[in-house]
Amino acid sequence: EGIIPLCQHEAGLAVVMSHEIAHALAHHGAERMSQQTGVQGAGAVLGWAMSDYSPATRELAMRAFGTGAQYGVLLPYSRKHESEADELGLHVMARAGYDPAEAPLFWGRFGGANQANEAPPEWASTHPSDDRRASDLAAKLPEAIQLYEGSAVRYGRGELLA
Image 1 (tube, rainbow, N blue to C red):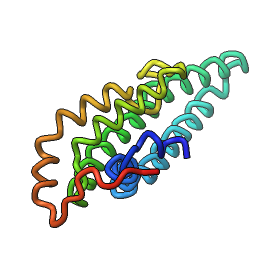
Image 2 (cartoon, one colour):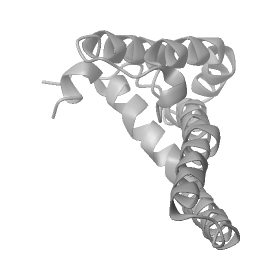
Image 3 (cartoon, rainbow, N blue to C red):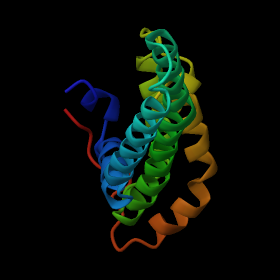
Image 4 (cartoon, rainbow, N blue to C red):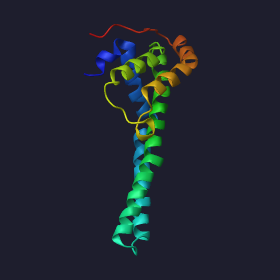
């Protein structure tokens, strides 16, 4: 309900829906599960390798490993998945007949609405910054516009959402 007013019209909703569909098309959920399994396995190996050390040393090593895995592996891949879903979603919405120029505009509105909330620095976040998303999508518009112009039906921005 909170995101619908930011969509403003059908094309804004297409940005959000296409982004989520893109996660499924790119199998990001499966990749995420594989990454988590790998990190857990590496943590188990580290725990086993540290079994002869004192509990304090083991705890310190495990905390360092957890922090390193979070900020060095999991978060960067999460941001990568979000960026991939943004780009693939841009193509999905363009092929469906919605004006892809709406995508950077939507992320601009989304970022403006979130300014009241203190966002963590991008390196500590699961998502790229809203500004980065808008600028990355704006840079990818020429290809998406070609897809849009080749779509069988063009809805443009579609109807306004109530």
